Each structure stands twice: as C-alpha cells, then as structure tokens.
Image 1: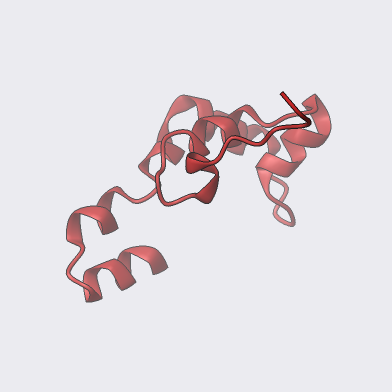
Image 2 (image 1 turned 45 degrees about the vertical axis):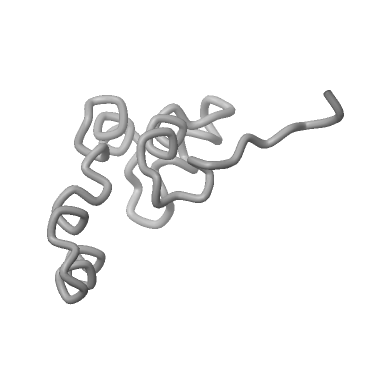
Length: 78
C-alpha cells in the first residue's frame, strides 16, 4: 500500500492501483503461499529449494519498474 499511496500523491492513480498486480497471479501467489516463513522472502526460500525462483522470474518479466525487466545478465562472453 505504500507504493499506492505515493503514486496517488503524484497523480499516478492507474500505476498505483496496478503496481505489482502480477503478485496475485497463480505463478507468483502460490509460490508465496508455499514458501512463506515470515522472516525472509518466499522468492529466496524457493530459490534455496529449487535453485531458482519461478515467481521472481515471472514477476520481474512483467513489471517494468524493476531494473531486471530491462537487463539481461550474461555469465560470460558470447
């Protein structure tokens, strides 16, 4: 709600309401429910269990406000 409040203050009503809406998609929400522990991100818990976080990959790929949406990391020379 903090992001929503700040968006509203700037007149960004649509962005405030739709910010991170993908968190309620099954791909992200079910991972959050399964890995919720209350002291760390469910994405980190999934990453420790599976070696990657499907929820984070889905989230960052659909939300342009995340820097990772715009970047493609390379592990070495191509």
